[in-house]
Length: 158
Image (cartoon, rainbow, N blue to C red; front, side, top):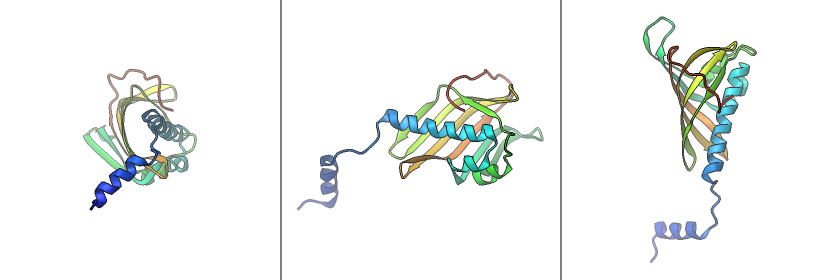
């Protein structure tokens, strides 16, 4: 008698694969990040929520406004509510390291942020993404942040 697990493996092997190629997956992941950056540049909270999970988290690690060092956390819903149209910033990443397994992905990349054409801060972004119904969305974004030892970024993002 064939076990259910063995039968499932045989049927999966016999059926044509509908999985995306690694290059297609990576392009989709980066397209989502570009869309997030476009929303941030526009200061458009509603557009941001189109590309993230509202209950997902932003975690910033670095110097806080009061001068102390630590982590600040908030949901994408909370963060998007504070955005103001036309008052965004430009973020660029370089040399992204992308890992995809089925419908989850991570991206690790150095970034720079500019406001009004001037370098504001830099660090490293770490994105977690989840694909549902063929659509990639950011579940979490964790990033370091500093204002010194920043190199201008060019390339991917925004």
